[in-house]
Image (cartoon, rainbow, N blue to C red; front, side, top):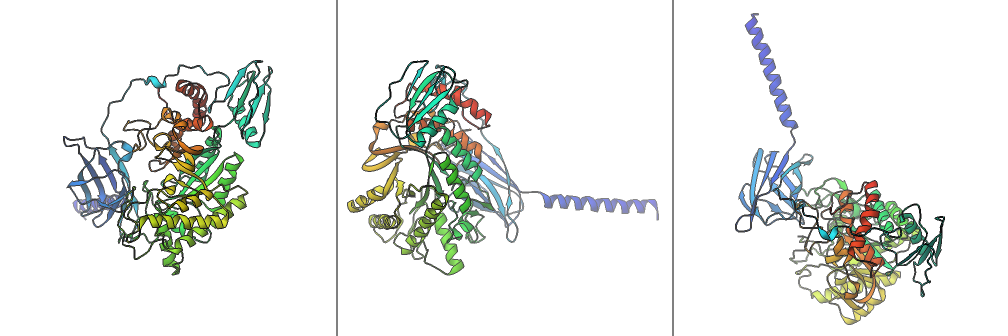
Length: 608
């Protein structure tokens, strides 16, 4: 064999090997997405660009987006599914470019996310995404409202104590001491003596002692809560938090003397608590996967706003009891919430799965013959219970019984079950009188509660638009309603939860790089601190902060939204009227609290 023939064979083998490597590399490449934000044009719209790379013809790309209004200029159609879910059917191999007009992006956290490529007969492929955001000039000006002009004294903590004297100056004992009262006397040797009339007071005294700077200075502190309900709500249905993170939230709550954990665990996006006799609730709606090729959710609930697939989002019975006990050890009661009759998509879909599996319709939550057309506030068209079905109350009877059992086994009181009652979209319950349906639902849920000797809670909506006799019946079993839009309700126990002040998921500011929503304005620690309880009417039983989770993605997001803005709610819950002004309050946070957050590696907002 000549050298040239030999060389040609070698070169052919090398070429085939290179081709093989190129084909292998091509097969191994993962699809990616790149999203570019367009500037606002004269008509107020922005032309955005989405490039999908290494996608396969005939596949479907799913993603989540909170901000839409699309007019396609180039590329295939963008289709809405339910809630925040969108999909694109891919017409060609390789790269697909979509240019579309939409409203200018108000903040970067609203950009499309959670991209996943779906192919028939193959595993779903999560896609990495690259963002090209418009650069906005930074505001380097110092906010004078947040400059510390107060030097914290030894007795300054958050929430602020009612009364303090230094050295040997005596404090005259207050009369009519409320639940949770305590007094601390620290002598010249730094030795504290604690007085209290109840276990809560002794617990809060210890929290105060732990917060005071060391070594302890001679002083006398007398303190008590103005509100017996001091709540913090965490939504885990929109973005799930594992047990270890929930326990950290409870630790933070205890640090600031919150005493009620409003646990939002049932909504459109997920059902987050195992119910022993209804396993589909968590097997289906505590698990997330893409709809099948026919746009049916047959095995699991569609992804939440984070777009994650094949992820578990529920607490087992034992985990829930662990949370109950951990909270109670910190003098925090847990009130679980299962939102109904709107915000009920997760339970509806789970019970449809149950009926497919068993043939049993006795827990059906939606009528197959219902012809209602509606669009919920979160862009769902199938999230309202058909409240006229008796099976709805079979379902909630099971849920109530299981929650009662878990609290009993944990030996932790069940103050109430929160049933939501808000945001039922217009158009629901076609061919039925809307007011009559609300009245029927309220009376039916009350019957369940009365039979079991438990209290109910709800959003303010639950006590509106019902017959006078139903309202009177509701008052007897009502623990409270959360006032989130109004100014109170005469004769109704209310927990002040104004969205404009106490919704800590709302962004601190208009900075587009900052996390959060702003439908009710911006909320920072000045806004939470400024809530004026005297502006509200009704039987005010307490104050609550609320952290909705549409925009949360990890625990850093949780602490950033809590710290420091939730401390304004803690202050207003403990002290209806605070000693000193906002400058004093914020100065104490900077000097006393922020160093602790840094030590614990908590992400938080600092103004300068």
